[in-house]
Image (cartoon, rainbow, N blue to C red; front, top):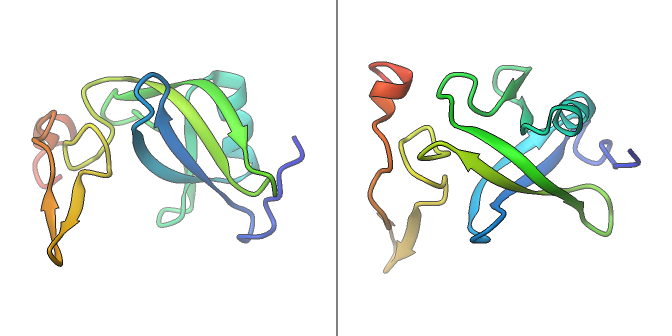
Length: 126
């Protein structure tokens, strides 16, 4: 759909934002297949750079992301997904957003409590 996947070696960054609050929930990467699946299914699918495979958010946790709107930037090499989260959190560490740490006086501090227990969702050692 006329996106520039070549700039980052076949991937585009996808910023994921809550469609109501505007809060940034996470950032993932998509290749052409992940983008196609996202458009077709309405559920956010990404490409895992570490595992080298596609994954749909919520496969293990059940905390899926229902895509409401998709935008691209002026260069068509980045995406903004406005989503409805289906579950208590997006972050695999147990937070509502992956952006739960803030820099304060040179130190990273947790700025909110966990919204779920990752050990219960992903198993021990999560």
